[in-house]
Image (tube, rainbow, N blue to C red; front, side, top):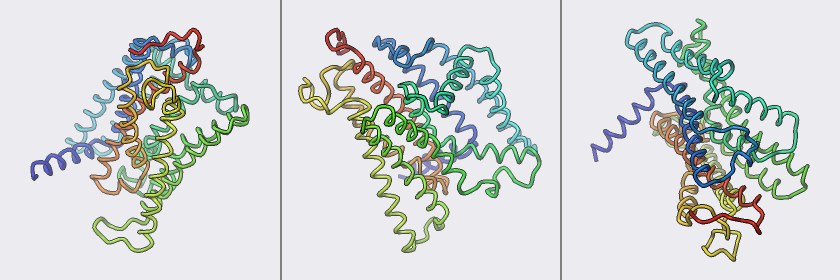
Length: 367
């Protein structure tokens, strides 16, 4: 048992040793790698995702090259971070962290590399489409849903603000919590869910279909998880101290919100986003008549999605990060959420393909 404890402590210390800004960058790079694998999978199964997403170009090699470029820069900057720490250079670590995001910003905004040029135009188009409240397309839904998986990264972006202040020589230290506003984290984490909620309302106004309101409710159910956790983070006692009655009630409320959000999101994934458990005539129980992948993959995905949805809800809970082991677990949850989104993309795009394919000429076969 003591070997397990030592291994756990080592893993926790390793994760916590890496600055939050670098951990967040690693999550983005993992997301890009996963998307490149999604593209390869869609092409392998001959799913016309480019047409479904209205993309003129989308190359797995281009995305993977962009991810490798960012990974090389990240490793270089992390090496500088460790060197400055070893040499005890004042503000050296802050400089290394900001250097990465400066180079990332340059690639995204000014680079002529194919992947970053495409990303620049894509992001600009999606923002323009959203702020003008145009009809919601499938690509808008998929993009905003991807953002919900990155909500923790948005919450952590305030740390980059503190890093900038520290590098500029202000009184705020790099680890000085006085520059972190208690409302900033949950407000930033709420942005992706607010975007999806607005999209659902716009879709309802344009189509009059009630299921968009039910979908809106799913995204609204994320807000109680985020904000009750933020309140717990402010009121939480020191680890090991018994909760008072007020905090016990808040703990129960938080557990209710996590449970409701997890089950709501899971059922929506299965029934609406993947179109499963709706066709009584299906040859395979709980699936549907038209499927692209082998049946066992759908059953496995449903089990995995439920487990990782729970991790996703816990990831939204900022109070879990008040101790080192909690911060390590939240980082693991972030990685698991990216992997869940990677899996989710396959079945969401496949269901969209099945829905838009004429039944009389449907050529989808189990593969």
